[in-house]
Amino acid sequence: MIVGIDLGTTHSLIGTFGEHGPTLFPNALGDLLTPSVVSVDADGHIIVGRAARDRMVSHPDASIATFKRFMGTPRETRLGKHVFRPEELSALILRSLVADAEAATGEKVTEAVISVPAYFSDAQRKATRAAGELAGLRIERLINEPTAAALAYGLQEKPDGARFLVFDLGGGTFDVSVLEMFDGVVEVHASAGDNFLGGEDFLDVMESAFLGDEKLATDTLSPQERGQLRRRLEQAKRELGAQGSAGIEWRIGERAVNWQIDEERFARLSDPLVQRMRAPLERAMRDARLQPAQLEEIVLVGGASRMPLVARMVSRMFGRLPLRHINPDQAIALGACIAAGLKSRDERLEEVILTDVCPYTLGTKVSRRDEQGREQTGFFSPVIHRNSTVPVSREETFQPFRDNQVKLTLEVYQGEHPMADRNIKLGELDIPLAPNRPAAQNSVNLRFTYDVNGVLQVEATLLATQERHELVLEQNPGLLSPAEIRSRLQALESIKIHPRDKHENIAMLARAERLYEEYIGARTQLQQWIAQFRTVLDTQDEQLIREHRRQLGQALDTLDAHA
Ligand code: ADP
Ligand code: MG
Image (cartoon, rainbow, N blue to C red; front, side, top):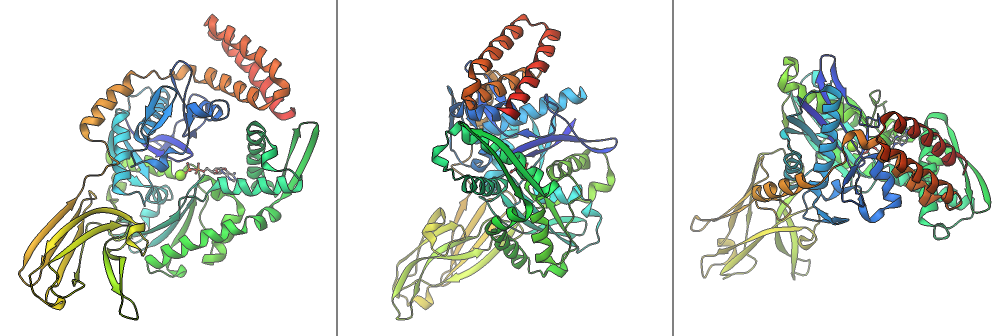
């Protein structure tokens, strides 16, 4: 079976393209959304998903979330006695998703289409492929998340030349992409965003409103109380959109608090965040050289786009209503499933080919003269601009700064900052110049070529002599070599992962432990419950365990609601 996977920063989903179109599979707890969280228990066994998220509270040092941000970097995370790279953490999520798909269908998963943000660099894409390999999957293709969203909405059926804007507000990231249909091909024309703006920031707004109203300071709350409060506020944030107002009841110490907020006030308090969403929207439109009226459709995806204030802001800015009828936290996964179906069955969809853009500006370091003619060094001079469709090749001619200069050191950078040093240096090349010449007769032609594999080739030609020098930048310190992947695959395979049929029990225990951590007043009671449940687990009597788990679940619900 070939599956489609949305490997998200906050949540991940898996599905396939079945007889009735794209279908998503639930995990062992019955949820379609699996939190992208990994935890390690005392025995060194791996826990993934909701139980791992609960363990972020009770075992913060043994649990990790939001590691998608580190894909493509060598950053390592220590969890208990294990040390993981971002690819390995992603592989653990993938393995858990695959087990869910296999349990749902009884078929073996062999290949996958995985969605990645449109702005993902080559290194980040390679890291995602490596994660797939580490999970024992053949990665059939990576699909850009906005393209997947467009497929879910059937936008590939639109006429040639149609352009769309995909607005994706997730847990901690905001991505804007402009897509164009061209000859049956979906092309990403521009992407922009804010890597630190998402649903969590709106939760912060709720929290400061609450703390302000109740005259509480964050530092007077214990981390456990803070966790409790944020979970309640998260619930309220979701109700707010659906009901127009929401509130929480909470007991802090001796004090019983009953707090309410309405949508209007929440929207007003969130205005600075809403304003921050404007810049990437404007930038993407500018980069794609489009006016709002030229967009065929605007699509909202990502869980946080459910907030009514998001649709209002988009409607106001673009003068029309966005599409948002497909469940926003499923749209990308559904699109990945459709892409998975492309290969196996439905010919109709075979037209769609995906192309990529170069996610960063590539250029070199130059000196300039200021108004007084003084030399100022260290400027970044772009050659290939961000969002150019790849493969792309551009040339620029540069002059040495001084007459009789004997050598030109060409430094290659990637980034968006006007000062070269604030960008990432990729490499450098020394070019010997023709001796004893005025600067104007010692020009160098620079050609940058960036291909679909993310390889950057830099060719420098000295115009006076036609002498050529070349620099090829392809190796990346953030990536694993094939040999490393093989050895890590073996290491990962030897790590014990809790079997799927134990997930419900593990999640129940993790939840009880989290509540123990949070509710000092109920600790004796919780400890008894945990001990009892462990005893029942030891009996290995499935029926008894199921009944006991149900009762414990109810007891925990009551405690969580009234403590
Ligand atoms: P990611 O792409 O980062 O994995 P998701 O698309 O799953 O993220 O979005 C997660 C975010 O969506 C969370 O911050 C969550 O609070 C928010 N969210 C989910 N449902 C709602 C809702 N009904 N109202 C407001 N925010 C929501
Ligand atoms: Mg997402």
